[in-house]
Length: 343
Image (cartoon, rainbow, N blue to C red; front, side, top):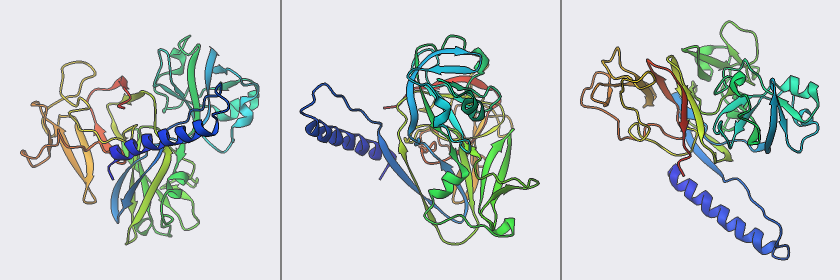
């Protein structure tokens, strides 16, 4: 079943549930019940390199109005001790649902919010996951609707697998998960004790987060296949995406497949446009094909063409798959891209 059809089925299911709720609550006409669209998607994880996107969301911890902002503290309507709702071992973020910053996201200072124990949530101004500098918020969050929800972590991703990831004493025979960090591809490997380690560090990175709109590579070492099943809410909001001029593993924010053409991947002369050129100078999108990473370069004629195969281009193919990751390299950054909700 395609992801688009799954969304349509989710909507039909929501309508059915709404009818049932209405029937049960017919005696109380003043009560309104709403819920998020909940769905799932599956993908097969095969031996070798796999791309993984996680377009569905964890449930909102709270969705309310931000009444004001003072420094890094956002006051929340209806809250008296918001920190008590947070788990010190978890990571959280704010997503903005209305106003001038609709679609923007900010990581939460969990420890600070717990210590504050008041009706506000503290933002983490140094997080690289923030879609804009928190110092630039000003009054733009006043009276805006925001949601606070938990991030997805490596441990969460492993829990989505039909069988646990393989951990051994050897990097070569262990499963690993790849992120882009400061423009480099970095892998975290499952160890025999169940922890996830990065070469050169003794720390356990099981709680390392996979930010919204980011993808990962899953390198499966063992034979056989596993099924990854993500269950969650469908984003019902615009999405602010930050493009850097470094190598970036991205993933769609919605469970819908998109083509390069539909996303506006065309060369332009502007300071934030995509750049067309040669295999060495053009912006590129790399995807996993048959367990291998294949690079497509944006040419000056606006075609994304496979390196070494001039007639093979993917402009109208749904390579930005909702359940996959795409490795993007751009010459120009664009910190102000807002993707409008596609349904």
